[in-house]
Image (cartoon, rainbow, N blue to C red):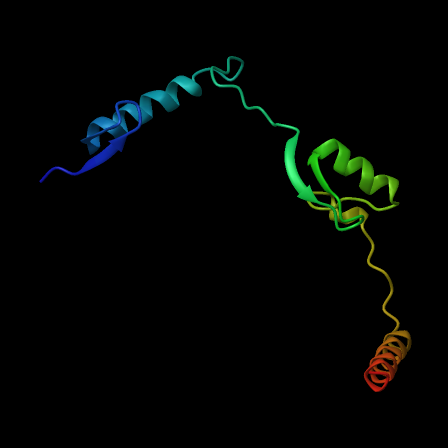
Length: 112
């Protein structure tokens, strides 16, 4: 029994072996020489993302990054985490913050 795969080039079902052979040949052609790239990899500047800093939606990565830096923040992700130092944990300040939040919530609930 022969199994079939969809061939995007011909828009038909082809025998599995034929499609896999075509894919392997295409991959070999792409990676034959490292200094010659038949299919360039393009990273576009276009995107759509909403900034958590100002709530605006940006369609350019550069404009988004500029707004983040202008706001005094930085973008982290694939950065070198060895340069990052976590803030010191102060248990008393943490408890005091929780107490203050609870008091504010109670006062807000009573005012309704």
